[in-house]
Length: 195
Image (cartoon, rainbow, N blue to C red; front, side, top):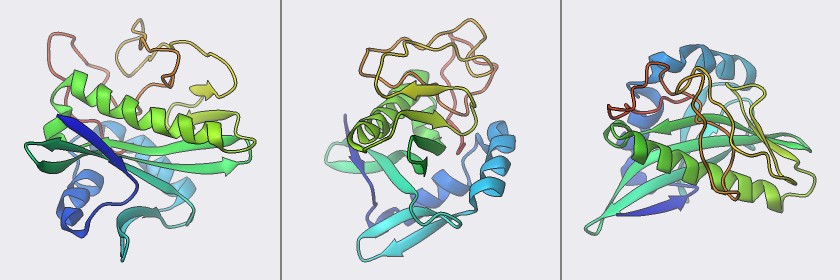
């Protein structure tokens, strides 16, 4: 299984993108954060152009998308998506993260997809002059300092108050935005919501 990352999607993914953004089963777990994002940054809309599909944020035309597609046996399917925005010269903010329902059933796979997307955002931040941190909208105070090593962070309210996300130094030390607080390590984890 290969994970392919790209900033736009071919037009045939319109239905899958609608399900990921608008009909994700885990949205109710992140409802407060979704409402906050819409109030602060605007509605999410699917935009179609000659380059392909992307998700736009109505009040911020400069928001960026990143999609993860899983390639199996020559076929690709949409597995996850992330939307981020440069809100100031010093900061990139991850506005929304979603893992498609079929891929969110496995906690390990969902975490792998989210971390892969977040690593790309962090690498992007490294290349942008002046950016000092990456943060996640719904986890205020959860930031990754670009110039130094922040180490693993506790994820209260996401996994459990005592759980830390173990990561390699190159990984982004922020937690995925919309995990259920009732996670049980013996179960697989449902999809992350758009959050």
